[in-house]
Length: 227
Image (cartoon, rainbow, N blue to C red):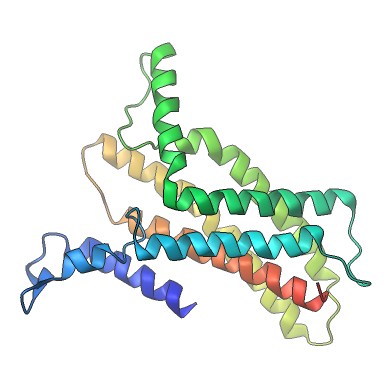
């Protein structure tokens, strides 16, 4: 968690240091250094860490989707939801470093523009929200529903363990939809020629905290069911 907070901090500092008077310190361009730790940039240490968090989520749901134990009795549909979530998280991990969603968004925008002359302009691939958000939000809601049911009957004699799992699930459920909200606001501001705003930092913050919380929730459940 401390590493996640570190990269969130460096992302905000990278934004604030852009063009700032204090970006040079003892002859060192701090902004260039911070860009290497910026969650918004591609092929950086921060992006690699974010990709590993997505992969960890996939592994944690792999335990729920394919794991078994005497106390872990779930329906075939619930197991299928966990399996799809695991596969989706692994694909998102690859996308985090390859920016596939942005490329798909740009291609989708060109297609929409060819059939709808009044389509909103999009130079950064924001159309990915229109293309993928319904599926991602639907998957999140399905996963949250079955996770809540598992937490309710989690075998534990310590109530704080159940409360911790509920809290992690709540944070994930609140943060992850916020990613799409921030993305839509960024799209609107970009069309107004506002450039890159601090909303991009908040978007990455909500994404990282949401995925980490989802990982924590799944691992708490897997541990209590001895998967």
